[in-house]
Amino acid sequence: MDIGDPTTTERTPRSRLDQLVDTLNDIYAELLETLESGGLDQLSDAETVAVWQRAEAFRNRLPLVDHRLVAYGEATDLAKAYCSSTMTQLLVRVLQLSSGEAVSRVRAAAAVGPRTTTLGEQLPPVLPKLAALQREGVVTPEKVSIVERAMDKLSRPGVDPTAVEAAEKLLTDYAPLLGAADLRRYASSVVHAADPPDPNLWMINCSRTGVCGVEAASGRHVAAAGQTYFSDGCPAERRLGSARQATHQQHRQRRRQQHPDTG
Picture 1 (cartoon, helix red, strand yellow):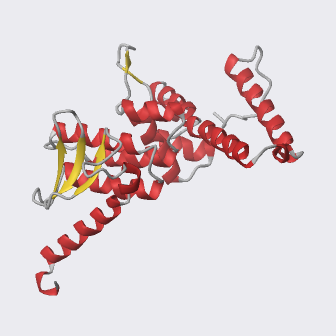
Picture 2 (cartoon, helix red, strand yellow; picture 1 turned 180 degrees about the vertical axis):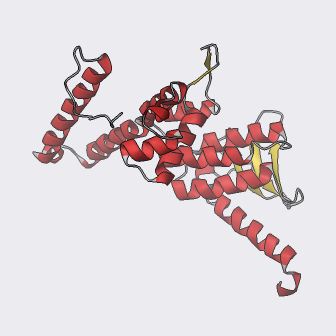
Picture 3 (cartoon, one colour; picture 1 turned 90 degrees about the vertical axis):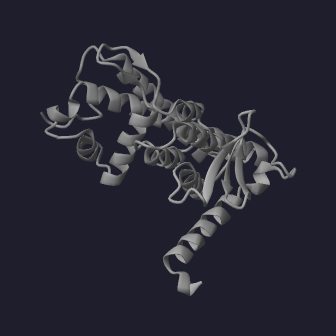
């Protein structure tokens, strides 16, 4: 079977999905034409940023289409129809993606995409909170990948389920607020707190009210979820950079343990 031509119009009658993709392409062409003909000149700075943010939210929701296609492809053995052994290999061949990008899309679909049982019953996503954020368009595909990979590290047997649940809450609470680089550092701190190489270094504490936070052994508060302010009254947004400091402190403590003579 040859790779399908995305521009083909030979099939009659055309499916509803074909028609919708055509409509989407037409609207996108009109959007580009408006932009290229000076549409931005009529907007204030605030209006320009608002349009930009709405376009970004739309971009963030596009992977939802991928998730459905990947789930359908896996359920119907689509890869084999195109002489591919895996869905990742199919994406590389059909969409000309890099291996890394194909792997990320398949992993994201498995974590936040639709699931069904062998009997066809619908199941919630593996990471339902993250899936909801993506559907709202408030997290980028990169952030989804960061959270998914962090949670995957905590999926091994032996990790405290309570710590895993708290870690998911922390990561999904801050995914819309942190930039990708800060979220990556923060995720590293959360993973080490939930599954610490040395329990004396990190921990996740949850209060009776359900507020969770990552703490160092010294009791220093690194980050919290479920509240706007930290216990000392500092706004959470101002304290988010502490995740970077926490990760650096952890690395320094590890070096001291491995090379005590170097200080």
